[in-house]
Image (cartoon, protein in one colour):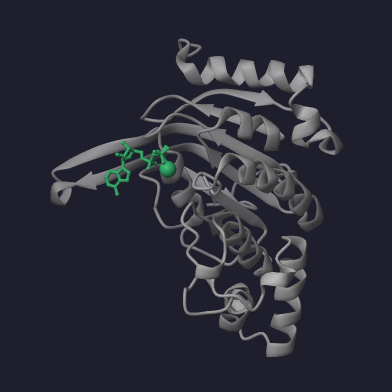
Length: 266
Ligand SMILES: Nc1ncnc2c1ncn2[C@@H]1O[C@H](COP(=O)(O)OP(=O)(O)OP(=O)(O)O)[C@@H](O)[C@H]1O
Ligand SMILES: [Mg+2]
């Protein structure tokens, strides 16, 4: 299916419904319902919502792992039907290959693409530098901290030059201090890489800190409850400033009220 859309739209969700078929087709579980949303080109869009509201399901569908049972998902006007190198996914679990050194993990996707060795190592080193892992390139994943593993996973995804990076609670497993550093770094990396990011989280603070817009989903089945614009300049997106920024605090409280459960607007 091809849709007419503005050049500004990267991914369009049009009345998307996602169901899991259970008990060999005898029953279905509705995970996501009637989601219509345009994700803009080069936007940093965050989806926030309670556990089980369908965030991971939505990411899986945009990644092409799961087919909508209703509606359409398009990227650049073309229907998404399968996974593709144009969409990189970063999960909560780091998914690094334990027997490969960091640099080989980061260069792996390029190897699959047939990129010559010198070039793929140069690219991998560039993204290791951007993600502050230059000194760790010869280490194995078990020698890295949780935060370093997650940065390596981001570096590996970016090395494949995706147009869209889909991130499913990537920082959920790291400690609070590391998480703040990773959030600040991600803002910087995203500015350099100039790509579209869809980031899913439970954390309202994380959502407002990172996003250009924050989409709040209802408890499952997930529907869009509200969309909050965050127009805080990127230059101010560091925790030292954000912690005391009245605009950040106002938006965080606004999103928190939405997530906590007010009636859905008719
Ligand atoms: N493979 C599956 N088969 C059947 N039901 C599933 C499957 N995966 C998820 N579900 C159900 O679909 C709903 C949405 O799940 P999903 O994992 O997308 O939620 P989530 O918002 O990512 O939650 P969390 O914040 O806990 O990660 C839940 O009710 C879940 O139980
Ligand atoms: Mg999830």
